[in-house]
Length: 212
Image 1 (cartoon, one colour):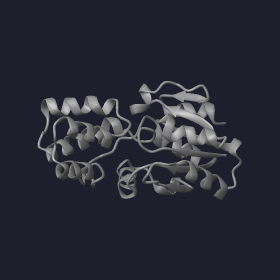
Image 2 (cartoon, one colour):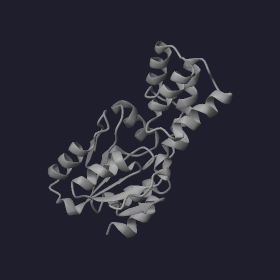
Image 3 (tube, helix red, strand yellow):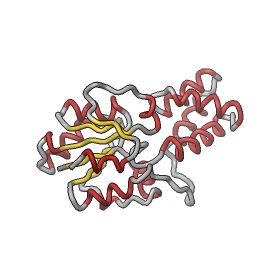
């Protein structure tokens, strides 16, 4: 058996912990810190596919100079403060420890590789838990899902993928014949359930009843 996890809003609470800090930092760079501007950006972000899309929309509305927008976008993946603590979703560490001695566990997370690994470290999740880790910068996960399953010699029917974003995390898994578990956290809370998604959870502890 192989379980592949997403990172953001699956193992860690990116929406509740990291994103608010990064939005405020990006706004400060664009010259519109706090207050109404922050509330507007949060509202835009709630309906955007990615935080960078929200920043671009905000910058377009307020005619932010391109150089400031580029600097703000760079801030999204800049290192976090030394004392910044990344919060895990409920029971994330417990479920990883439960499965690491039972099945193969992998991590496939889209984004800037150094920043994704920094968040993992600040959340207190040991990389050694995972048999394999992949960080596609373009967030196209299907080739990595396929490669990890092949490398670990897992049949598609023995592979489970758990993530919050259906189009990015689960659709490629479904296309490969893997089992799918939708984590309703962050943006995943507002996504309608697709008929092919096998399971929907709000707490990773629910996996113990699903993956047996």
